[in-house]
Length: 394
Ligand code: PMP
Ligand code: GLU
Image 1: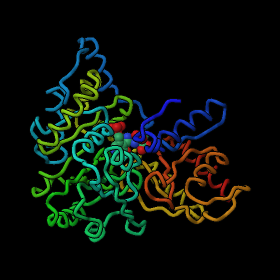
Image 2: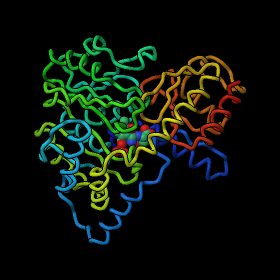
Image 3: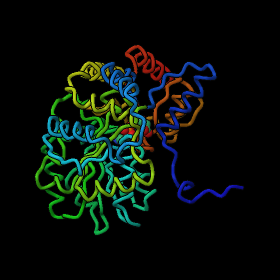
């Protein structure tokens, strides 16, 4: 029998991808499943980006690229950071990777030694915890409350810090809660970190443009945080380019160089055609993709209104991304359609079976009272999905 490594045996399967695969399987069997599990825009990649990719194919971009990305792409990223975030990076501080996911995996690989702790405000994005563990780190989950919009307070951060704390990782706008940290809130966190100069911040800003309140703030904007913050971003979400697999970081030079070295042994760099297309995407004004953000905002209003009409669903008001993260603990200990609901996983599976709607258990995001519902789906699908959920739980 094949003996697999402890490393992979101890790793959880990505819950978002697993649920999406399960929904696909059921659909293939002929079941009418509405998939609200995967965080993936349902739009097509905009034509101006597709045309740049076609041009790159015809121009014979087919060789290995520099491991950390084409120079022109790094320039476009530098321009984007300056234009959208007022951050001034140099080329040696930028690394392009195969998705923000690989960027995060690189960061963990180059910074963590055995037993180093990474503070993860809960709920956190599904892969953070396993990426940390895979690299011998210890995730330190810090619970936040729906009453505080699922945001970490400075006091909670202070209490979580130990001599072993190496990093803090968070996303803003947050997947899965949709919470957006204001500049003032980030400053309060930065103030705590002033007493702990060795802790590095990983600020995952992949939902930057999907922001309904306007005004995105980056931790690296603060002069005293710039040299200890890794800003992670990518094109999957705002440009509807999940399958193109391009993400990037702006980082202190030593970290960027280490990520480059790591990537050189693992992927040799990201796909050349996708990189060429992303040069075009980032050089354009973000207003080119505003139509998608406007639509996400309409869907947010729609889904919040529909969910608030169901007894037992308690939500915060997400200010960005395209998820709602309702607390459904009201149903724990109850029997619905003959099925006993002990926890969020049972509830999510119940919805799949009895409402034909795919969601993701909050347990995967470090919050066992909630489920995540993605509203990256058409308004018709959202209306029908929530109608089915309401019927199933009533
Ligand atoms: N960070 C967050 C918060 C995400 O939701 C995702 C989801 N895709 C990623 C990173 C990874 O994105 P990418 O597709 O660029 O790997
Ligand atoms: N980030 C998306 C999500 O949270 C895509 C899935 C994944 O990358 O795991 O659903």
